[in-house]
Length: 175
Image 1: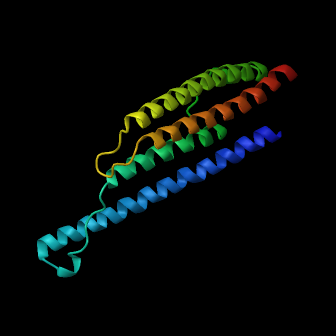
Image 2: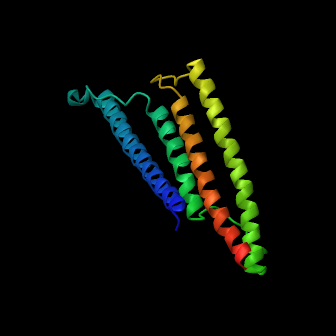
Image 3: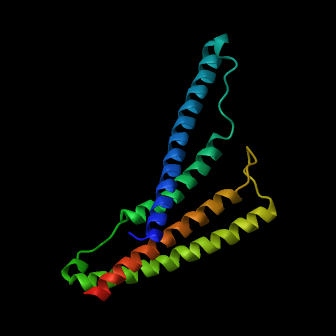
């Protein structure tokens, strides 16, 4: 592996850990919120004074949405590294390895274009959200950092696809 490929894989690994952390936080936040809602219900139903100070966490839905976008975006690059996406390769497997590599180069190049456009448009959208000052309803958290996160994650997918295209192109040239 060359240094560029190693750096990309390290970046993707750290992003994957962030995605996993976001999922864990979502799970804990949801469970705690449900428990607190249950405490409020029990207090209302039976009047248990010990449960009076407990209240549900305000903005749980918003936080779970933000964390979900972070988890999904930051896991995209790892999915590309692991080739975990859905692929229909019934016909492609019938061709020689060189032709298969050509298919890989073409599809990954198209994927690069798509994710480059997604990253670029996400940056533009985040800038628009930042300048307008748009925030979430309950917690009044700004949206733009999460959109920048999607842009960064899409850029990371572009890096992964560049590495893949180079690797597959070498197969085409060598054979």
